[in-house]
Length: 238
Image (cartoon, rainbow, N blue to C red):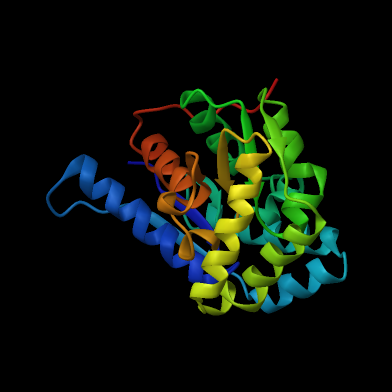
């Protein structure tokens, strides 16, 4: 079994989910007392969030590059960046790294295409929904990506940062997300990406009228399958 390098802490609430999911999948596939070989590097999210807010993406990329290299030095065979938004700096994270990054966008796109979906709605932070780095990665896989309107994007982002990253789960916020999801489906989305690791703490497949693609679970499952040698590393777009 390859050693999975989890680069987490953004937030630690969702990093717990990654650790749980990779170990649950190993147990399901191997049975008995088996668990995943993992190394975890958890950053201080306050510092990363400040860099996000101030637009200091180069600084954030340099910090995650240092963290990824620490995972490599600790024996990780590949890196799983446990956040959607920070894939904005994936190229910088990989600079000089001797082990591969299992890109969340590639793992998500593979699952969407396998489900026969081509037009998909995207929920995430304001950065993930509003900037091209994530949408373009999915589009390069042949997907048509829809995002909510400006008001809905602000609502989704606010609930993530004001509630979910702090471990706060409110029924009113769940209802608000259901409304956003329904509007994406009404606009033609054949499925919806839960494109922020914390979103899965609030809503599930039962909250959507169309199939959902929870990126935390999909990423964790792809990591285990690659670690066990049952599937190759998800292929980047050509």
